[in-house]
Length: 111
Image (tube, rainbow, N blue to C red; front, side, top):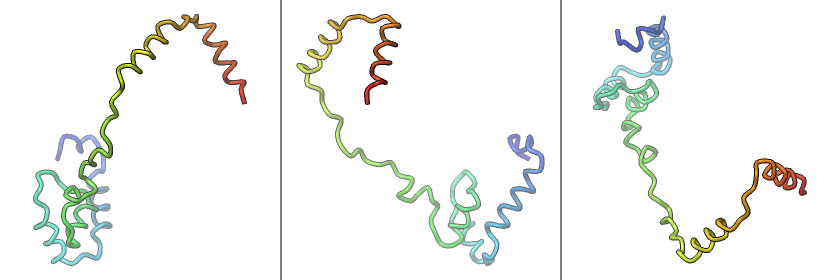
């Protein structure tokens, strides 16, 4: 018994029931196809195995498990704009927490 599953009472019965329900109706030839198709080091889930039994390839090899390419390159910031905004922030009046709360309350009152 695996160390992880040994801490879960009745896990074997649950697994047998779930796999039995998932694989119900498959022929021995289909089960053999699934066993032949699975060539990974880690075991499949019951739905993954059934997919292989029905002639599909392991799901992690499909497009759904591939990284998406970046749609757009990250925009470049213009140094002059960045410096201008930083200057505005540096000149801004410092506010106390109470002033911040008052300003927040004013903003929340706006329609």
